[in-house]
Length: 348
Ligand SMILES: [Mn+2]
Image 1 (cartoon, rainbow, N blue to C red):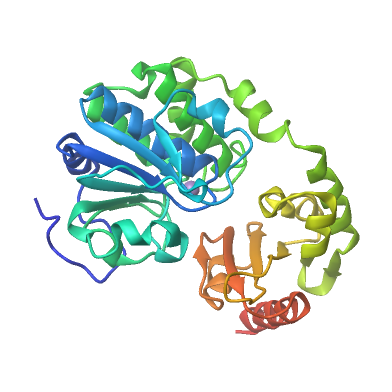
Image 2: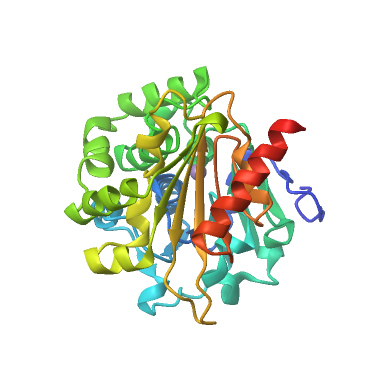
């Protein structure tokens, strides 16, 4: 296998089939994903963890950062720990990282996996990442979700032809990631393969209405209150087709909300016809070093700017239509800089 070859470029070093073989021979496997996991991160890690367990691998899942409110509902009786709750992962022989390959999204895991690239694998669909995280990499930036790739790895692990034959407790988390990362099949990333896979997963027993209800129709009331505050701060830059929504740390605190609840705040702004890019800026609570940073989340429409490029200017990344970063500037300064960058990208 070619996986020992080091590459300074963030691209695949093995095939999905080779990755499945790597997982099967893992012994004790730690499965992780990016901090503050979303539906795709949880779905891909959980599906592979379950398929690996069925293949005789000893698996532990670990998550870090704020967890989605539906975590217990989807994880069920899976063997998982929350690093932020002070639970270190059990000793492992290999570690699989799902839905990221960037150190910036793996900070809490660093003490366990840094310098062990020969024992770590990455399964990811982002365009950028840190090649030194893992020697074994399966990366497809055309994939709509890590779960699209994870589905293939699961069928290979279980030796089945079609995702429609997956056990329902594997099909369901795969559907969760495929659905959430595509905005429930609205985003331009949706291809015939994505829709065929979705059909297979439904055939396998995944109940998408239940998953939609769980992820989209089960908000705590604090999220609506925070969104109402945030939309009150909306600034529209109509000539540029830009909408900026700002969330102040003190509003999060006074409402009893959390940073994670701001996910999806771009959607009402992006629903406006003249808006091509919606930017959500969230003032984070001060960190250990006393610095107050701003979380940038951006979404754009077809024809709008490449938001991954904009995020790159702040050291972040993502996809053309959805990307994020962190800024050390204030809310207002971050907005100003982003507007300048968008103006520059239009004139170039
Ligand atoms: Mn993803």
